[in-house]
Image (cartoon, rainbow, N blue to C red):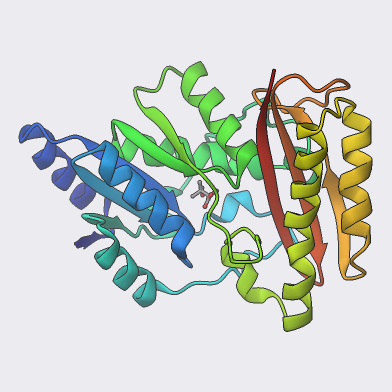
Length: 282
Ligand code: PAF
């Protein structure tokens, strides 16, 4: 695995592969890598001949008072994991490489970025859309792989790529979970032992909602209430949202049909966690 920090080095590697007719897959990350990220890398290596991974803790997608400063950073360990995980090129840019002096261009997606994360974290999706557009332009992959845990982010990126006619396929990979169902996340490391136990309620809430839907429940309100009831059973959990929305635009629905997502965001102590289940309903 090669590691590069400058856009020139990145371009020359990618260009050399292109001259050899090799396809390029890309996995953008913010580091603090876990099995969930490694699954994305493995998936990318099934879809392309060469895999580029970026690690960049993007300041513009964190709001004031959010966890940018304490977001876990572990470059050496990440690099080892990627080496073993089949990554060919690690792109580790400085902030000044991505946001050059005088940077003043942003990418703003409307629907599906408006609600939920968009409301809870104003400016978050502008930061994500801007950095992902830049990274896609720098790497120019044929396919980029994103995790389904950030379901709204995935919907935003799909919309952005479609609307801006970016020449890349967006692929996704299912959420990787701990044995008790908690979605793997870099932020899980911030949980105390009690908070970690409480966090398993997110998966219980989603599983019980899915079971009710499988048994025939079609009222979105009943499902929202059910999600909340399970989460409220854990004293350490503060619910930010527990919703049922249409999968492509993240707008709330009344009756369940078609492709739906149940996104959940909670705070446990000072840690914010998100998760979701996606379902297809006849
Ligand atoms: O999902 C993430 O880790 C980030 O939002 C991303 C896509 C790497 C953009 O900074």
